[in-house]
Length: 226
Image 1 (cartoon, rainbow, N blue to C red):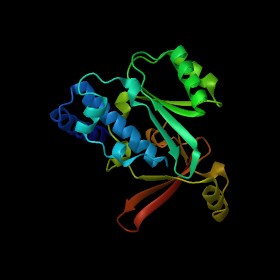
Image 2 (cartoon, rainbow, N blue to C red):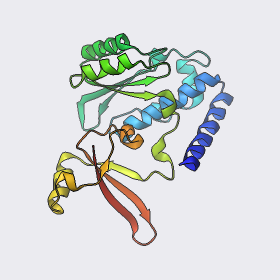
Image 3 (cartoon, one colour):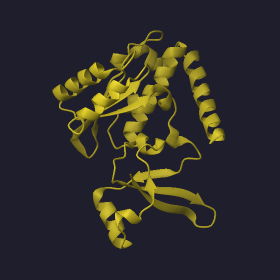
């Protein structure tokens, strides 16, 4: 895991240097990488993200959001699921500390937008009262939280992270029926697992994990989110 973290860190450092050479300040280059990872994450979750956002270069980011001081509120991303345009998600980039009042304000904004799922990318302090406020908002409003440093790289692109595919309800039922299994017989993946969080997995969902195999070509396992 240490080697994995070091490799990810090295990749992030290289990206940061490239962004800084494009005219972004160090802070702006970090925010650029974080927002790009957010767009990639939503795309992998099945949301429609414009190509301009997915492939945005540092220079284009600087022109749109600023090369020095980036106003985080302008970074908001709204996306609809590819298979259902009414299923939308919004990502906020709050500046400074996040407290209970902050979460409730974002929840009010989401209700106005008629969006029930959101993500907060936190750069400052995140209070225990904020966590309690988020818990109280569920299930009417679901707010995920990520620390900014968690999104500086796309962890699913690392060579040591196998491919993950979240099964639909129909695919899950077919799997259990095919192998005559109950949910309790499946191996588990924790809701707090970094990859589970990246894909926004929900408790009770089943994920298909595909690993390379020298003998069989690939090795497939299934885990249920708990």
